[in-house]
Length: 430
Image 1: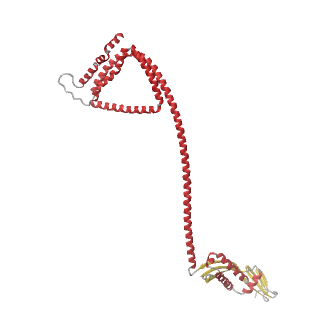
Image 2: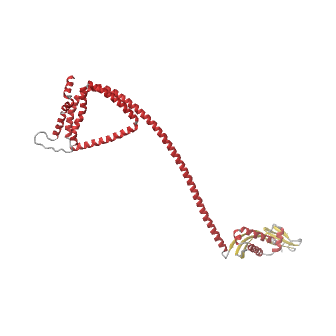
Image 3: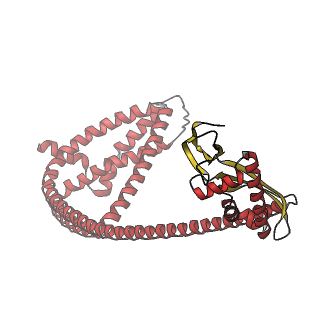
């Protein structure tokens, strides 16, 4: 028996009935005065309750047995007076366990009923649809009991027959197949794209090469035109230069002819002194060791060979560069030399004997060199002495000098010019 004020929290509801109340008074969170001897009060919990809805081996519409475990959250609705009155009417005085058991039976029955109307694939693949159907059907019944279904979701689906595993294997195989197909298609697309990119790259490279080749061709054509123009100008310049040189040389030679005629007399005397000096030089040369002479001749021959090669290369290059200009220059030079020879011939008419002496003196060193040439080419000489006269290198030198001393007599017999008398006349004249 209670007398005085009684309170309850927001998670509870109180039902007061007895004197002064034609119908029970429902109070959701608050306080009320209870007159103990004539009134009574009871409380009902409004806390949320969790239900594990387990439906083992339920046959689906395909006749395949599966087990489904769902999780539901329920509570007695305290906000709605009608639903609270209904819940109090049905569950007042019962424990939470009893209320949970009643709601669980209801939820399990509806869950099994929905499972029988769907296929395994629908339940497994579309769990949201299954949950919505169970939630909707169960809520309509539990509302009539004053209970609200807060949420419902599937926790687990099991299959003892291996049906779900087979579906998974089939799906796995399909996914793997699709993955392999996708990978192959991706590789093919990648290869195609790479080939297209390579084709575009090669087209670009070929286009660039064509442009480069065209630019190089244009450059070579222009360079060839410029080279022709430059070489033409060079040939004209060389031709003008050679022509001027030829004219200048012609003037110089004309003036030198007069000087040469005067200088010949003095050169004859100098030539005699030179002959004496060459004789001494020849004697000194013969006395040198044979090895040194051989080395000297080899070096001279090598130098002459290189000189000839260089001269031949220089002449070939000059011929290639000058071309027609050289021909013209040769023609000009020929005319100049012809005029020079004509003037020289006139000078010879005036200085006939002096000119002949001049020519003889020009070739005399060459004659002496030719006389001594066999000795320079001789590698070994064997001399036998009879015990009288000169021997050795001294005898060879004397023989060469004797031959050279007889040259004036040979020249007189061939040309009729007496070099010795000419030299005496010049000395007496001077």
